[in-house]
Amino acid sequence: MLCLRYYKRNYGGLRMDFPNFFLNIFIYTIPFLFVLTVVVFFHELGHFLIARFNKVDVESFSIGFGKKIFSYIDKRGTEWKVCWIPLGGYVKFIDDLDPASSKEGTVDNENGFHNKSIKAKSAIVSAGPIANFILAIIIFTFFYSFYGKTTILPVVETIEENSPAMLGGLVIGDKFLTMNNIEVTEFNDIPRILNETNLDTINVTVLRSESIIDLKLTPLFRSYDKKETTRASAYIGIGGGGLQENVITKKLPIHKALLQGAGDTYNIINLSLGYLYRIIRGSESTEHLGGPIRIAQISGDVAKNGIYPLIHLTALLSVSIGLINLFPIPMLDGGHLLFYFIEALRGKPLGDKAYEIFHKIGLSFIVFLMFFAIWNDLNFLNIF
Image (cartoon, rainbow, N blue to C red; front, side, top):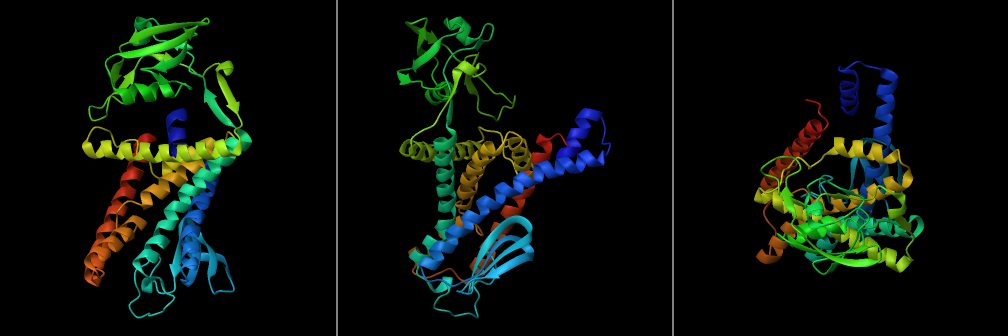
């Protein structure tokens, strides 16, 4: 589909230049599968390790679905396998009816997952998303320690005509120091503080030719996708990061890199939940929700810039998958945790009929989200 957009945009039609067509499929597919495989492996490894810690027998550890390509059985009887459909994976316990960890009613094994305590089952289920968060922190830490953290200095390089910045007295070369007494250390702090404070007037302190200048700016609020449902963003009309002298990459010591990685992981979670909350409130558009097609496109584009950006994308996707799996939707890890919470309150588990109904609802919702995300992707890529 990505290639169809390319041909449509560049040639005005859908002419099939097969060598380039399949080359593009290769360019976008391989990085996508690399990223997805790494993230899924660590997610399932989290389930696996905590299951083993709680003395649960694991029947199989699979990367992918469908017919297996190859497999290996370890000394404890777990079959490790890679399958032909590389779009996920699972850990299947000895008493699971299926990879979704539905209970097999005819099996009664003391080392089975379903015979463990609520505390143990909750720990095993939570371990997958937690492993994703840990993976992201490790990647960010590695990234900042060995490659460095890139920072765009808060220096004004461009100013739009008749913008709040120009009307407020900013000039090219000004370096932001504070906004409403909040320290500004990088250019990305400027839009963040603007939108967090959400005030009509912003007090700004800048450094100009070794002199400290105090200014008052009156930001405008506008929607960038021109939809009424989208929350307006504060805007002052400046640009930065275009000059190499204002972009610095600095390697961090391991302890600072670790703290920065943990902070980045938290910020991704916070921003994602905030975005979803605004969607539920109706103040944000759903068009930015992406599915596998858009992830594949982003993976391919990022991979063209080298391995470091692709590793960085792996961390971002790992956080997203970990967070999504914690949502209280049946069939996801969060859905299982919800059932265990209900069981703890009731003193007994839900009946088989209730499980069946909830799982059908969960499956329907997941299928709906999948098709919705793909539809969003196709619209984003101008397929229609």
